[in-house]
Length: 418
Image (cartoon, rainbow, N blue to C red):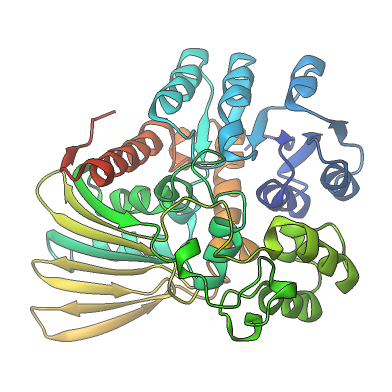
């Protein structure tokens, strides 16, 4: 282990960037934040306050010109702003922790991977599900061979009705032009995770799904363009006041409130809902990403799987069932129920409490896990500590792009190997 803390620069100080920076603040002996680049002065100041002495820049270009002096750069900008800084800092010889997705297009993903390979820097993509205690438990159980050979998998991502409304109808991931397809923005985690836990690459995929509900023709009679002006708002499950005011009153100005306003009081929140995008009726937004999608998957070696992403659930952990020749596993993000066909007995394994699965609560320990792994890899030079390196992360993205092609064309698509 290095005797000095690993030095890091942060590009993008939104929710994700501040989450990763908070790990640095809690582990001063292992890492130190030396610079932040963020155009929003309030967000930039928040990072500077938590990290005294950090150098502040309004853009990543200014940071690049000034020279970071850092061992690595955390890139936590919006989806369509990943590629340019990733390639530039790779060229400058800086290791990269890159928020997912790598990029919104297949070509750009290859460009980033080519850059880190050409310039010889480490890359860890923030596929945080790989780094949770629950995932560690599941992999350990599978390695015992208790279920025999994996034959099929069912996996559900319950996005949550309010989370879908917040991030994917009103928020920055509502549009493919602004961000990326829903499957890439939200569920590249899941295709990556399925390959990781099964040990098998996604080889072929078919997909179905569309924007079925959050569209103008589903708008209730009498609904207004904004929740604060709406007569039917009290009975609407997607009411912005019902989502944001209770969070502010019970927990303060934390996510998701912090994503929509810098204010910390109800007056400021009300102003944001009256004038900003998060107060809009979910049936009167400029969203175009799907709200439900299903994939049929064939893994390398012949195992099969299904993956469902849907907005119309509670917001909770992923749900997974794995079927093998000797047993089956049912997992809910916190525990595993393992049935052994040979003995007829069921054993329950607990992963322990690591918080909920959303961005406001550390993704079940995954946010801390990816930071710890990345920093330790840089400190020790041990690349094996990074579970989401270039090749594995690219493979998951290629599966997403294949699935989107399959959805649009109604075909079964072969996923190219990396």
